[in-house]
Length: 281
Image 1 (tube, rainbow, N blue to C red):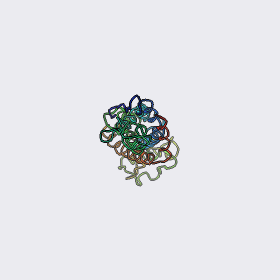
Image 2 (cartoon, rainbow, N blue to C red; image 1 turned 180 degrees about the vertical axis):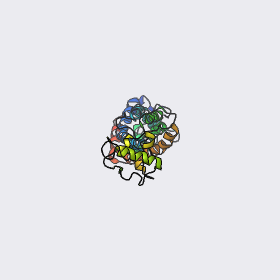
Image 3 (cartoon, rainbow, N blue to C red; image 1 turned 135 degrees about the horizontal axis):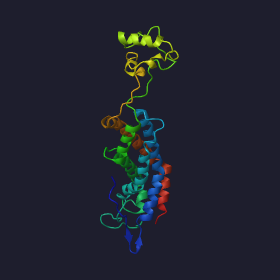
Image 4 (cartoon, one colour; image 1 turned 60 degrees about the horizontal axis):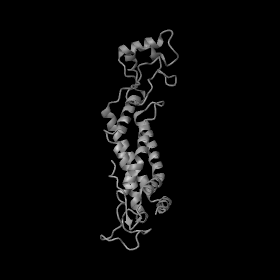
């Protein structure tokens, strides 16, 4: 996922004027000060989408803790590599050091702070793509972050949203006088229902169906009504989870890319980064 780390060095006689380790670290941290909150904001949005898509239990642990923690570990080195895979090496034009180097506004792409500031749009664009590259890696099926999300959904998700069986709520009772109307049951089951609903000791109005065996009670759903299906919590298969995760990750990455692109063009963000870079010789 990471670019090959490179040490950006440029030297005049007895003078080192490249963005060295302290400069690289400080510049990277300043860039991430603007970009990391955006990534975390989109991670939160992904969490909301996951809860809605897989009907995760309300009391389930946060399914994206590993995502956040792994990003926090990866973002500093990955962003540093994204920036300094471009801004490295001696300042040369046609093989010759330009007159006046080191220049605080250097128009040669090299490893000096002056070059980084002159090409600040390129620098920030590369840093933004570094963030996208990190999360794209997490969306691969063999990545521990992806596997962790799948395992979490298997444990805490549901194959379908919770629904209510008619007759279990006083707000929508099944009338005892007309159990056949609109219900998908045959004649023999109708009789069982009538007996249950009219027998002594039946629970409060509309709850008599609870006394029926589960296999029979499950038939008492209104024809064609999705909201009235029996509650089913089948285990989700890995393949099904992966199919449904794909669009969620695609939307997450697309939205993140757009927001990061807007941030990289923000003038205040640019100025903050340039001021920090200019503090290094």
